[in-house]
Length: 346
Image (cartoon, rainbow, N blue to C red; front, side):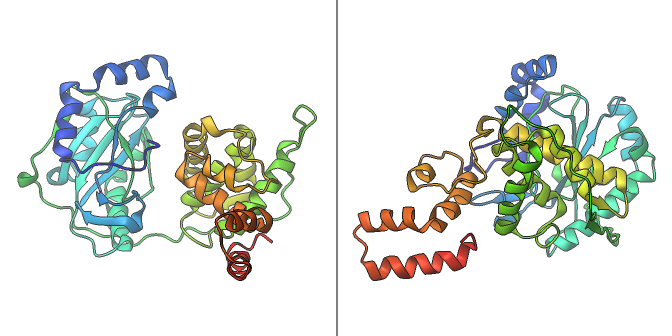
């Protein structure tokens, strides 16, 4: 899941591997132990299309017109789930148990969407259709319309797959309800000390200030989901306690509609970031300006990008590097001034 480069594959070969048991040993080991490192080392894929060079939505090159749904904590079997899916029977491409075994992955063929906003309206229509069957009452039904959702391979001998030529695309669209998320003013922070060092509240203040400088205020750009994911990634590296961060975000931000969905979204985003960046926990010092050597020694591309901004904002380190590379004093001065404006860190 941490690799930045992938290959183009026929999604039906993945579905076939899930049913035949290509990844059976790893999946069953994960289900038996709950060891997240086993899951993290399973192959991943996206059904939304071909993305390059990364799976960011803006890097979509060829859409597949496939959409995946997360059905978590569903206690029933395939047959009981199919009773809910009968409301959109001709559009179901694939159904299989998730890697953890406690939920399902449902892949739906949809009409061609001109843009991401239309994709979200189609997703909303599917969501509302399945809610009519009461699915949201017996499972955690993800309400996040992610075109580039990353899926783990799994194992399910009872998996269902329908050939593409027999499918009819789901064509309905629904208006997306306004979901206003606002900061709650004057919230009381939770404070406690950690081994005499900065407590979580102090760490968080340092991290969130730098994070906001980098990506903008909450809700200013991207989705709430992406903003919380990014914040959790920075907080994990800054050694902020995961449980404390969950409480902090839920106390500082709220959703004016679907409060339960918002709470679930926050918990999942923070959990996923802390799992993905567990190996880097504590590596990011909120008050430290990174040197060029620090930046070049990083292995995670996103971390490199963030730390590059920190490094170039520290004009002495960056200037020294440029001078060692033989750049003229005029070039160094112009470069530093440009980077100063770009980063907003100094």
